[in-house]
Image (tube, rainbow, N blue to C red; front, side):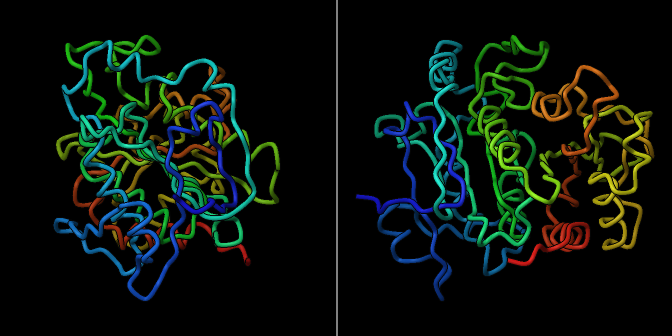
Length: 337
């Protein structure tokens, strides 16, 4: 039996709670508490490639384990994908619970060795433990964007952020080159361009929960992506607010996207990061990202809020977790607990 979950904010579709495993992480001198290892059956997994993991990166190890059970490229039929999507009832029934720091994920299917509905996972840190409770991280593109899921997990943990949402399927998981009914010609399982996924539902639910209890600070939702080294020749890091290069948001020095770009360039000592206003030739501006459009109240271009930040990175940049940690710490102040 899992112990009762205590967390600051849990958003669980009530009708599917029976199919979820919820547990909490307690730090110990060994980084992973014995209760985590035995109760949740999550093994220590220290695979990190060439990326150096810090002693506090327990959520990264968790991510490494979960990725084993995600839906990989060309692993699903269209019927399997459609049957796995949240139902209308699951989209409506949400419950809030004011307790502690939790991980929410599906139960594994013992036959397939995968999560049965490819939903990914959510981590929510209690507000009492979050030094930057207004920062929220997500990764939509498992497998195809490099190691961005682990990167998002690391930066969520290292910066004392509030939430982490990771999609549980490759954008090309569905066989047959099928496209999203929401935004063709994007792939059917592309969580950044399909508003029917649990990834999108959880991001929206977190945003709405934060709006229902307005804090004294501005919430910022960062979505991490990886781009090919041949993309956008003038930019190693391309950060946008989900708006085109001419949008007024890039002239606001306090906009989160501009604060991030300045901090990255300051920490790196170079001109690594750019916004669409600085590099208008790059087309990776996230203007069609479904969660970005939700936060921005699009379609009207003047509605851009700046709360959404979409970050594309080439491999060297996305592997430099320490640079990103320092940049986010400089860009966003700690709120005293």
